[in-house]
Amino acid sequence: MADDRENLHDTWEEWYEAFLKLKRELTLQGYLVNDCIVDLHELKKYCTDKGLKVNGEARSQFVQKG
Image (cartoon, rainbow, N blue to C red; front, side):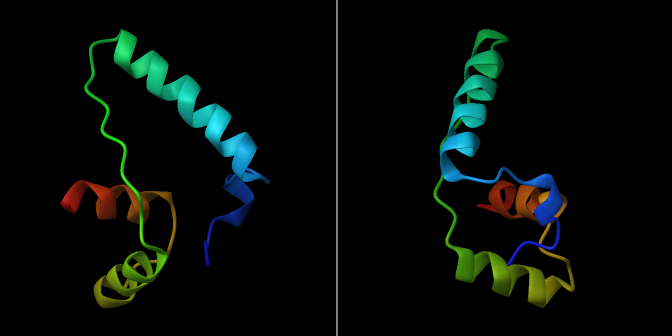
């Protein structure tokens, strides 16, 4: 459902490894990183309601609203 598929990892494992690395880096810089689970149906509805493409910017907005 992502409009920016070319910017995403090919597998969940690749994504998770990159996620853990970034989380570690941000934590070391003093940021508080909160994990969240995204309901894809809620994300799609959010994007549809706001007239947004389902991309990195919209995903970022979606998780920040909650």
